[in-house]
Length: 140
Image (cartoon, rainbow, N blue to C red):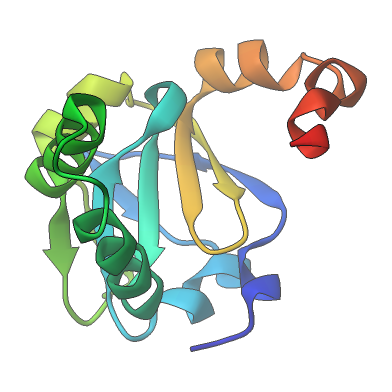
């Protein structure tokens, strides 16, 4: 697995018939395969296989007595689609694309251990928030 630095930055990309071509700066992180899931804030997450396995292990350890935790894990596992060896072009599943509103021009964003695929409109809306506004998350 390449270092997490491989999942930094962002790139404007175009989906053609639901197909994504990974930019060079992102492709190396996914050579061992990837898992696509619906994700928080209305985007899709693209997980390098090893990172997905680590994250999935955390999901199955969530408290079963907590209904929210059960639904969180359930929805992530239900939306997960494994893509083995990553070809040049990745066909993204239609239900996941539809749930994230992805078509045409989209934004691929590095998020450390995974990448996120955003509709242009949602990304513009979310990324317009200031770091100061969001910095409270660092306090906890």
